[in-house]
Image (tube, rainbow, N blue to C red):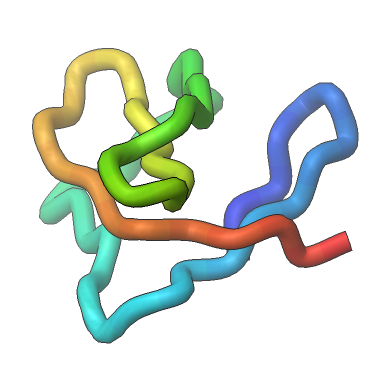
Length: 56
């Protein structure tokens, strides 16, 4: 589950993982449209993503 500062909550919608390999202390995260109608989060300083869906 991803909880953003603006109150949005997202859950990973596929079998991927968002393991960073290192702790991230409040990184800037944006969630934008992906291909084929899904949503993809992007965290500043981290180059990985997983398809997510709204959790609230």
